[in-house]
Length: 71
Image 1 (cartoon, rainbow, N blue to C red):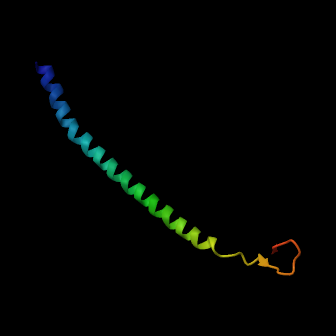
Image 2 (image 1 turned 60 degrees about the vertical axis):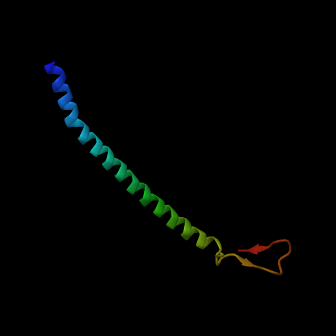
Image 3 (image 1 turned 135 degrees about the vertical axis):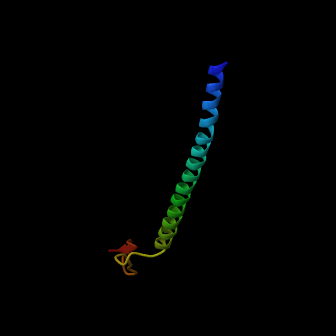
C-alpha cells in the first residue's frame, strides 16, 4: 500500500507541471502561427500591389507587326 501512495503522490506532483507546460506550448505555438500568418498576408498584399504594375522595360509598340510587346 505504501508503494501505491508514493506513486500517486509523484503523479499528483507531476500532473500540474505537465499541464502547465502543455498550456505554455499551445500558447507559444499559437503566437508563432499568428506571426507567420501576418507575415504571409503582408507579403501577399505587397505582391498583389506589384502585379498590376508594368515593368518599365516592356512597352507597347503599336507599329509592330505581329509582336505586341517590345523590349
